[in-house]
Length: 296
Image 1: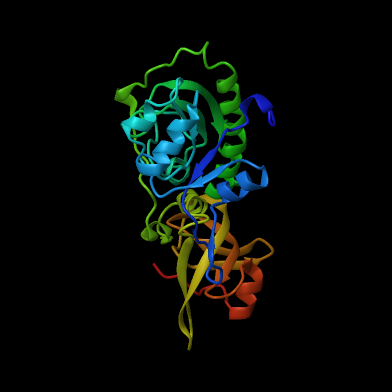
Image 2: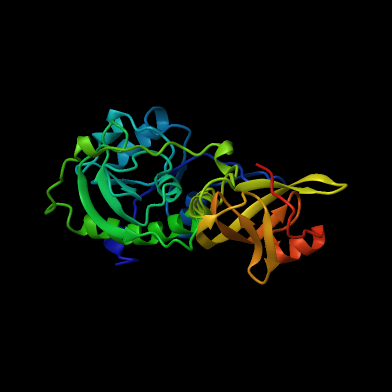
């Protein structure tokens, strides 16, 4: 249904222009840039729920408002404005993982079988009635960033399907007894602890991509501790006695490191201020050897 002109937006409201790179000036959000490329009217607003922004939105007399990763809390004046309400896509099987980081938190907890939801917004966080849900398998080889991109592709088609049948769909209230929450990630969530099980360490590395990214430190004789950012890793062994943080091997898989149980292979890493590279290349550059350790 992609490209269906029945659902061409009458306008796009997005965050104000901001500096989005270290060297550049103020730029539109990716949504704003895409909307401009499609020739859509774009409103870059600090707050959509008041002032000129609300007046502009009201003047459109929308039948429905679609809200995805908008980053602003909508007041009741906006929620009540469209005939069919404000619709939102959320990458979890609500009421599980309400909040800002549903995919990241699910990956951290080792979830594989998850789901995707289109709901109608209410003032309470991610608590609105469900209009559509479908199951979604979270590939254990993908990072949270990759899974979010995948969810977005699926979610776009789900939203179009809902829009096509909006008058026939009966919303389903969420079961409040099954609620769980997914708060935003913090910088400390990227710290790697090799005393945990191998799968837990790999899941953390996956969950914190692209932010805050997994990080650890490796001790090198005569050089002290070097910060290492880990972009990708895979489980080598799930069980057996571990040697947490010890480099067990450097081979074609990357840097094999012992964990509290089992071992993992760091396959793609980065030194501070350098591009990310295959872990074996970085290991050779640092002259890492089996027996050296990543620090806890």
